[in-house]
Image 1 (cartoon, one colour):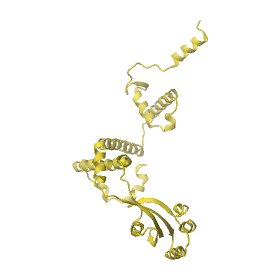
Image 2 (cartoon, one colour; image 1 turned 60 degrees about the vertical axis):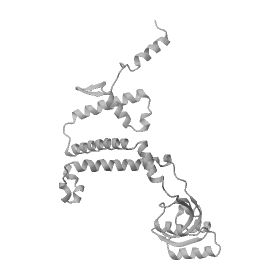
Image 3 (cartoon, one colour; image 1 turned 135 degrees about the horizontal axis):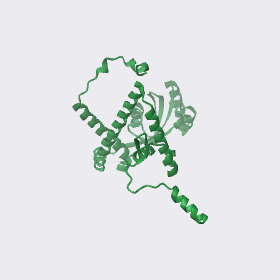
Image 4 (spheres, one colour; image 1 turned 135 degrees about the vertical axis):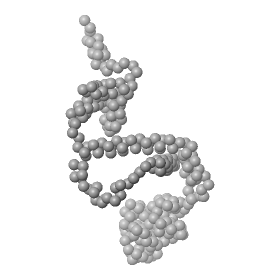
Length: 277
């Protein structure tokens, strides 16, 4: 007779999944009324799961996914009377998924190190040095209130304390109006123009923008360091992707036969859910 340790070892061997070497996506893991479920189906479903499920132990996840696919296939075979809504939704989901695959392929082919370097050089190689500004502001609702605060500042009031007490921009107000460092294009146009024209250390304003009336104090300026390729990688990659996708869509659209019979329809028809009931 086997000793207890030997019995336990044998049980572990018998309990372990047994696979022949060389499994592929087509390896059959279950059959439901003649329809095969494959290892590929299981792998694809695992990849689509939320992260918290993907961290489950392999044996638990394997059994759960296999059970789910068997249950889904059983239910699908038993459901032969899909509604128009169901069929249309399936068509839309397939169209959306396949077009997503196409977009991923276009993007992957377009975003290369050579393309990233070329885009970086085009933007920065011959670019003139840019100025950055360190400024603070007090934002209020009316010009009258801004003028009153400006008079208080002229009388010796502290800019930071007034910003804390009166600025409607509570984020910067809590920091005494400090906006930190910023470059051109990061602020709304009237604010930016006032900052560029301002003298360091002097209060400018009131300056009106869509947010209200600003009193602006430019504290210092500096020449911005040129960003590195690594710093710009994500932004440049997105630009390259968008350009490549647009170019491919323009190419495909130009060569396709497309008619737009629906352009004359009432747009409110989109709300008519009864059409697909």
